[in-house]
Every structure is written in C-alpha cells, then in structure tokens.
Image: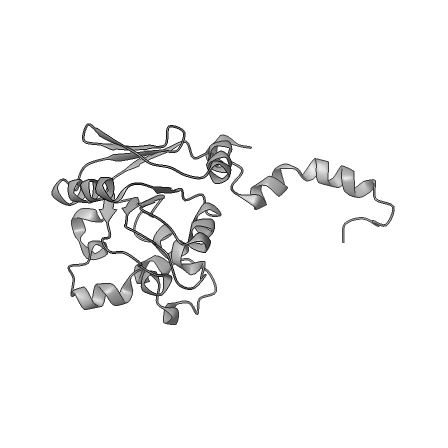
Length: 202
C-alpha cells in the first residue's frame, strides 16, 4: 500500500471538547445531513452546541482554528450510526485527523477508521491534563503516535491505546478499502479471468 495512506503519527494543535456522552446528533444535527457530498459539512459541526454556547464553544474559538486533533472524554460519538459525524469533524477548518478520548462508541470508531482518522483512548486523568494543556497553551503541538501508542506535547507524554486490528490497518495503510481494490486491479482481473462464469468487464 502507498505510503501516503499510512498513519504512523499525527502532529498538530489540539481542540479540547469537554463532556461525556457527546453523541453524533450533537456532532452533526440531522437537518444538515441532506447533502449530496460531505464537502462543506464541517461548518455545521456542533452547530447546536455552538449556538447554545453563543460563540464560546471550542469550535468557535479562534485559538483552536488550526487544530487537527480533538481531545474528548468518555463515550465520544455515541448515539446514531451516522457517518456524517466523523465526516463533519474531518471537514471542519483544517480537518480533524485524530481523536483522543476515554472511550468511543463502536460505530463512530469504525467510521473514523474508515476515513483514516485514528481514535485512541487514554485515562480520564490524562485526558484532563491534555485538555488543560490545550486550553492554557493552545499553540502546543501534540503528537499522536499510533506506532508507539502515545500522545505527547509540551515535553510531556501520555500512554494511549488502540485495538490491534485498526492499529495495523492504519500503520500499513490498509484502512482505505477502495484504495486496496484499486491497487490490486491486476490481481483482480487475473482472478476474474479464471472464473468460468465470468464473461468480461461490463
């Protein structure tokens, strides 16, 4: 698989989004899901939360405008299975490229991995420290290292974890199933030609 698909580490500023059980309805309200493509969906990420916070939500805070790592809390991405939720954060500003939280809803986790967005888990205490650091020093560059399973920033390092199978897919660049198919077109054609019931590509 090509190197550009590999996700060994991500280094960027981070945006802290505090709160447990932040569901996909909050990440992207249903009324914004009537779209043909995901382009432009990012501006509606956390739309209702941002409205209720009247400009004080982290996604409205200019000091986090360049953030590409999201630091959440427990059970992030729970609720409905809408794939628009990870697409919304992936299209917000420069795009969220990794999420750190105490735990994730299983379908949200899978949808993120399908986009090449690593979701790693950390302890509650470590997340509080990371969030406080991002809030007090927003210019801090955090590094989410998928290979070493660590998050580091400002001279500090925290242990994180990610299940073995998605970790391997990210490290090897096999998370994109469409890319896998395209990279194996020759082999696919050879197998297809060997099938007695196959009459060629339509």
